[in-house]
Image (tube, rainbow, N blue to C red):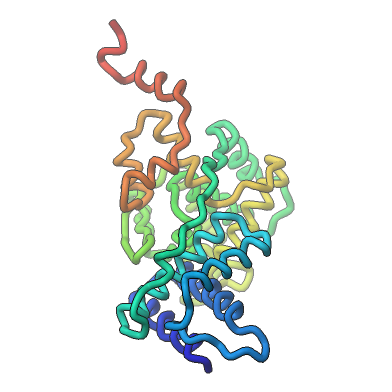
Length: 300
């Protein structure tokens, strides 16, 4: 194994020891494997980590551009490599983090596509009617009710266990990024969907996962994405909708109806308010309507 490959393996071991999320580990492992492949052309001696220069990294970025990757994907891959080089610097394996000298590609300033409250509710009502030939309609409905009703990430959704839910108080305990836990309330529709699903849930003996697949084991985030895409295409005619669309919709619709931004931040589990602001897509007209309804000075 080359010195570069060994260094990458040490870094991934360190990430696992830090309890990084499976999603983060998957991305970093994939990005760094691709990075290693680029620097491992056939019949060529591999460079050591310390021999890689800022110019080498710029050429690597150029190669990524040449493969048609968008700026957002390239930014993530560069962030993975920067983090890897930072680890090597702390370890003393290299003298300086040359990846810091490489300029980050500018990301396009685009807002996420957020379905309106009417579009979202029409879609979920259609899922509830169970008119499409689906094997587990009760489970599918619960997926939508929790994604939109609680604004949770798809990884948080599939990570829910039976004991994550307080059915009496209507709270779910969510494990978010960095293993941080938070409590999120759920409403009457989600409560009804939960009871209907639990009555039909067919899990393997002893399985703790709330959402299970046809084998009776924990549903994966990829399966949830496929389920959402299926209904989005069949009901809304929009295959671009994905689980995160409902997280954006949750935040946007709450803000449009006058919810406090900091309360939304808590519900979403964001570390900073600026991240929450990116999730909310509210028009000036919506904000003025909230002002007219709620502010004491709005009514002369």
